[in-house]
Image (tube, rainbow, N blue to C red):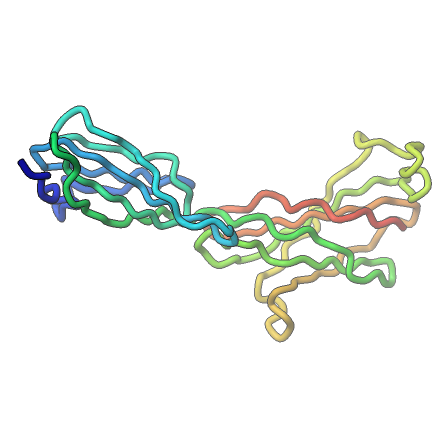
Amino acid sequence: MQTPALPVSVPSKDPDDWSSTDTPPHSVPTWKLLSRELEVAFLLEKPRPGSNEGPSWITLCECTKSTNPVYVVANLAGNNTYTLDIAAVNKVGPGDGCEFQVSTAPVEPDPPSKPWVDEARDGCLNIAWKPPASDGGLPILAYRIRMRKLVGGTTFNQWHGMGPGEKQATWVDMGSVGSRMCEEEDPSVYNAWVGPLEATSCEYRFQIIALNKAGESKGSELSDAQYT
């Protein structure tokens, strides 16, 4: 007795047998297995950009309940490519696998880096930040700048817990900056001037949001406090 041959028509070229529905941030690929034997499916998951981990195989299904199943792979990360391997199984063991790839749709970008105050001048602040580690599979179009303002906050009273509390903080949308605003400068660092600032003592913190056609990122980590 021998192990079975490759599953028949996996992946099939017939659109009725293969589909991939992209619903960011997940893709739900499905396929129809046409073998008359039992099947086993594996998923090769690639790490996210910047990760030190290598690809790893994950067993999705040790053995299907029927010889002609439709299997749905859910909860995949967006903007990623996965390799799937399907093999027919009989009492002797699994046969040769049949590998094919599935790519998920682009998603919103990762958050930009923690911003910092690069310069203070004439009642304004120059805010700088670095682009996100991943653009989500689509070019970054713009960055939105948000300012958290705590009027009355000073280095002394905030350090000693005597100043205004978090409930008194207000957020102000300071507008957007195009991703290609500084083509002549280092593209790894972006910056923008914001102001004018309050005439009285105030604590400022800043947050950056990246935008692409798929949506907007989560807000970056707040900048360190800047007092005026």
